[in-house]
Length: 256
Length: 310
Image: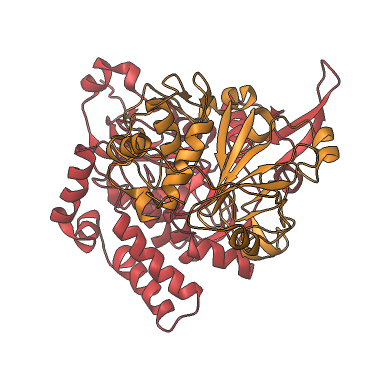
């Protein structure tokens, strides 16, 4: 096995960047340093015609990556600045791709950002909630990108569906009128996809510093694990150079 | 000869306007988003005025100022989609909701933006089709299902939100209340001004009406939606007011540490939070004293430099 040449957040950004296709339109959301890095890297490599839009700003040109990508530090320079007056126009059209993080994520890729334990009115632990949850219903696909991979985050069933994944599986998803759904879940340890027949989360590849055993032990439900799970492809020297020299010049992803 | 009435007020007049325009239990709307363009100086006035049981609404993302109002005991209910400091959770919000002293209604961006849009347009609700699969609309007090009168299909309605008072911060205005944002992102500020009964705007500087007229397409909120405008340099601090000054992340982090220590019941936590409130809200009698309390002009120049170099 080759020596890992990058940090966890960097491999996450590179895995996501390779997923994005030229000419697509997408957005990154809140607390989105990794997703924004992925979009910017894709634009500088194989997908120069990606349009970043849907969250009030069109094609921002941040000089560097920021922990928050929703204020003028990152968005001050962009091709068009809209406001929340235009939100409904974007929401019903949907996007090709967007990203979600989660306080809890379950085997069907449902996401909870509201509460853990108790009820919505009397929560044991209250989370931040979420702003725009409508893209799940109107967009072609989304990616789940987390800062941690633990049994606290990856649970059998979320306490509350803030943003839907595949709900309770193929039947409920089919009835819901949802399109798209989660395509990949990318964590600091591994990449997961969803088995087409059951729509359950499946281990796709393990990062070089982790193992199938470690991923399984840190996931609170039975991941679908096939034989001979491959190691996640490392960033190429060129991807890493662009990421560090042109996208994440301040090293935000190396600090995570 | 009669003269046109100015909407420009002195900062010392804010308390009496708040007494007239905002009562305990009213719905208060706050401009900006997360750490940008928040009307923090005006929020400190609301806290000093001792308002209780306020209901809060904002653009879909809020954090520091909302948490501060909750810490000071001004808030009963929130209609806020995402409440976070982004790199960490809002300690006072979290604590208040978990202990049941604040009711955090389960709302999202479309219900809040839709509600403000309906109010701005003078209709009782905004139709919504984009919700599918989420538990949020099921628990959202603003949402009902309706039948389309044209197709007979079922869809959602989200109720108009009409704040009693909206507080905004922008960069420039004239004495008649014509507001000009210089920041690229203005979020829901324009919409909240149109949706609200009363609107007070703080700006970093007052400019001449000739200057406003010379670039009228850049007037972000016309005077017709504004009841009072007040010049408060650095009035968004510790949030950013771009392109003039950037976000004071260290200041927000120091507040969050004190509030988190109190939430965890750590020894000295409650005192640390109380000391923060004293130092930044109750002790300073004017904006100059507040600026001194947060590090004075040299400290703020660093934030100006950061904004300049973006």
